[in-house]
Every structure is written in structure tokens, then in C-alpha cells.
Image (cartoon, one colour):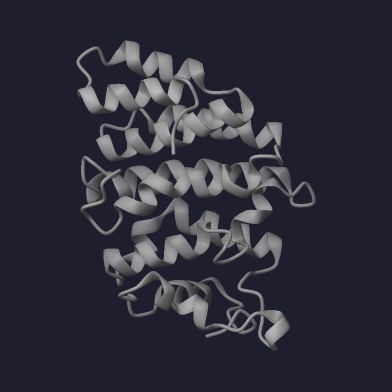
Length: 224
């Protein structure tokens, strides 16, 4: 199914997730779609539709993804959030798109984290032992860092910090590591988030040593 015909939310879901899982990243389905200069189509949706669809999915992921394996979900989420794969998340920092929708999309990552990542990811997502570990760890890097390091939107940055402050309180090491990763980039890119990390360290005096070390690195904006 191509972007041109994925006009409804259900069609879009199938377009994103209903694919065999590639053995190699270079074989993932979207690399087989020709770019516009090759007579094909860009792998995106119109801005409002793209963020509306993503937000709807993230706000209730279990309702829409139950028929897919964790590996298929991982592959689909990488497609959505990775700006080298599609353009969905490019609209997060585009001022031409309704600010309310963009902020709602950021907030929806909290539900994605608590409903999907918390019960299905390992306690060491940095090393990636379960299918959803990699996207859980990298989501905020892809969504708020990368291409956006030099294109800041203060409203979106503040919404991200507030959302990450809630995610870091989810009783899941996976979600906490993901939040620290995102906060570390915001410390480096926007000088925001130090207070959230500091509170996390103070609230968890018996924190696992490797996570404490990672939090201290995030406090300095030194995460990868």
C-alpha cells in the first residue's frame, strides 16, 4: 500500500506495520519504495494527517497494534519516528502545523511508553535484548535530537521536558533510561531538563549503579 492510497487511519496502520520483519536494516520495506526523483513518492503523509494519525496511535497503542508482533511494531515505529525513513516527525517542529496538535503528539509518547514499552522492554534497553528495546531507547533521540539540534521550538522543548518528567517516574527501567536519553539531549541542545534529572537522582538514592552513572552523564548533556 502506498502513501497515495493510505487515506484512512486503518489503511495507514497497515501501510506502516503490515510487513515482514527484515533480517537486515538495509532490507526494510521502505528502502524498496522509490523516491520522488525516481518516479515514486515521498514516504510521508500531509502534515496534519501525519501527526493526527501518529498521535491517535500513540495515545492507545494496544488497541491498534495487537495483531502485530513486537518485531513488526519495532520496525513500524522506526519508520514513523526516523526522519531518514519518513517525514512524519519532521512536522513536530514545523510552525506551520497547529501547535496544539504538535504538543499533543509529544504528550502521547507518555502513553506509548507506559502501555507498550514498560511491559515489553528489558531492563537494559541500551544493550537491546528484546525487540522493542532499540526504539524505546532511541525514540527521543530521533524525535527531538538529530536533525532538530539546530532547529529549536521552545514550546515543543518545554512540552518534551514536561512529558519526560512524567515518563521518568514510570516504574520501568526501560522507560527511565529512555527518558534519561531524551533529557540528556535536551540538556545539550536546549539547556533544559537538568532539574528533572537531579530530582530523579535525589528521589532514587538506591538507583542501580549503571543507571545512576547514565543519569549523571545525562545531567551533563553527555549521552549518545
